[in-house]
Length: 446
Image (cartoon, rainbow, N blue to C red; front, side, top):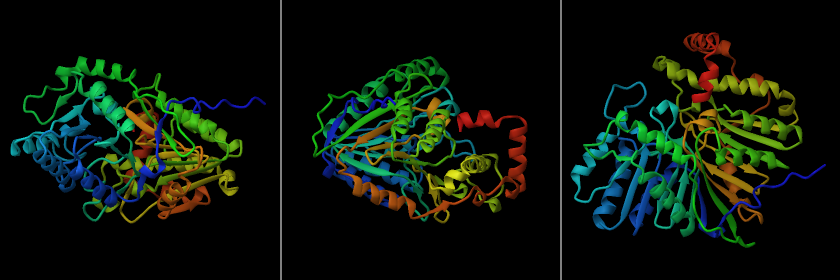
């Protein structure tokens, strides 16, 4: 049998001192670290997230950024959020100007202003959003799938659990800043949401098409570094769209490369075809596969039955049906422990973790949900860690333990609730979707 070539051994990498890599274990710790880093910044702050919300936590972060700018007017600060998400209210809420109203209000209150750039990945939000992640503060990179609002930052009683990692690394920080500046901010499709004179989406329709086309060719630029035995390697990756998406290709190749163990976190159980295929093949060749997914009640779209039904609240049930079907097909593998499914639930908090570990050698930190939407529509990125000499084993074991502490192991598919036990309105919605065969379409955009 011919040995499979390892595509990652030739991947260009940035050398990282393992002692300058950190893991944060909670949303509250993430908020504290982010604020402290902003306060200590001396030369640059670049914030990239899906959204910066007009709520207590969002205003706290924006206030910290503005105060830092007033103390040091020469401090470079740029915020990037999704163009569409920033200009609408919450799903189900009344029509409003969205978070953009807050950005304009803050600009009027201070002498030294901060641009909040709207990044339009597609002409309509449903067909693609800015899902790129990263907070670059001086030479530190804080990487998380979290956006900035009360629940992501655990500002009040509830939190949305994510992963949070820190890198002290000038080369990595410079590469990510260069991508933001050259691939996003310099394009005419990108405009400052804090300005009163911003164009409408219709007016920049052609620019958006050109912008998306240019992003399909974009990559992080850096001079590859030799990684010593005392270091780990880090490779920033980016991808968008169905074709020539290098990030998607590397994710599939990572899973295909596994020899002993795969550990996957995803908030929405709806693997793209390529990922599902490689997971099945890995199980067949004897690789131990662990999947951590949120319980339907830990999904950020879940609406408790007593709060009244909304169509969007049917999504967590659709994801759960996917999971039950997958578990049923793999009942024998679950029984033999070749496949372990862990359901996360902690009170009324929600689950937003993403990422992949392969053989304790490769760790993918990403905001990618590992679903068809991420695969085909959204702008995604990731940091791939290569740890050939196992410097991070203890820290990642600690992170895994932290993740699993609120999970229940699925021993049989029968543990997962079936459709007949769902609320009647949910059942009617799902039957209608299946009757119209709309579930196939929904799986591609949700």
